[in-house]
Length: 338
Image (tube, rainbow, N blue to C red; front, side):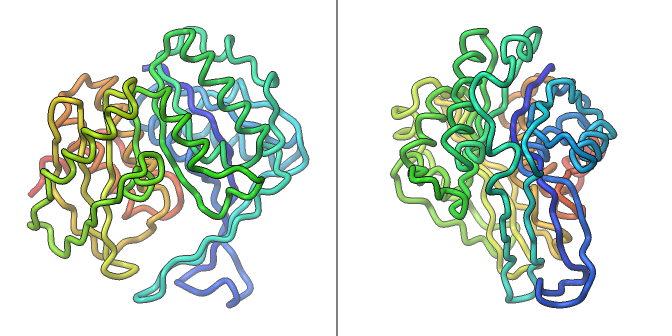
C-alpha cells in the first residue's frame, strides 16, 4: 500500500542504565516521535511511505532526513523552514519508579507550520492511505489548522484516513482543550486507534480498567462491546475501532493486549506478558502501523489483523529506541509461537 504519514520528528535524549536526568554526564540521542515511529514501522513491514514533516534547513535537519531515508521513507515532501527541531528528554523507568518525559517542542519548525505550506494535492496523488495524529493538533493553532487542511483534502481525494488519537496532556497549552479538537479529528477517520484514556477523552465515556496480572486472565468483552456501540453512534464514519490495552505491574513488567470493534462484533486478542521491557516508547505506534499493514497490505480478516498488530507492539517493547525494527517475518514468527 502507498501510505502518507504526517507529523513532527523529535530528537530524543536519554541517560543510560536507568539513570535519572539529574545523574551522569552523557546522553544517548535517538530520532523518534509518534508519527515518525509509525512511518518507520510501515516501511520496514514493506509499504511505500511518504513522510511529511517540517524541519529546519540546517545540519540537524539534514541529518534527520538522512536517518529517515535509511529506513526506506520517501522524504521528498519534507518542508524546510523554521529554526529548530523539537526534542524531548526521556527518563527510563526502573522498578517502582515510573518513566518521565520532558518536552522541548515550543517554537520548533513543525509547530510553526501553517496551512498552505504543504502541497497536499501533490502529496496525495496516487496514494491510498493518510495517517494523522492528535499530537499535531496539540502543538499550536497553526499546526492544527494545517492538520485539518490535510484531512479535508485527503477526504476529497478518496484516501482512507487512519487516526491515532495520541493525547499528550503536557502539550495542550495554547488555549484550546484537547476534548474540543480531537473528537472533530476522529470524525473524519475510518480507522481509529487509541488507549483507554484516549477513547475516554474523545467519547466522554468512562474507561474500562485493564488490570491483568497474568497472560491467562479474561477480558470483559461485554463491557467493551457496550462502550464501542455507543462510540460507533458518535462517530458514524469510523469502521474499525481499535483499543490498545496495557497494564504495568512495574516499570519493567508490562502486560499488553487489545480489542477491535468493527460495528458487528468485538474481537479480543491474547495477553502478552512482557518481562523485562527494554523500552516502552513507540509501542502504540507499532500497534497501529502493524494493523494498517495487516488490513491494507495482507488483506487479513479483523481477528488476524488484531493479532498481528498486537504481536508487533509486543516486539517493540523489546527494542531500544523509538522505532520498531521488527520485520513481517519476525512478527509472524511470534504470532504463531506458544
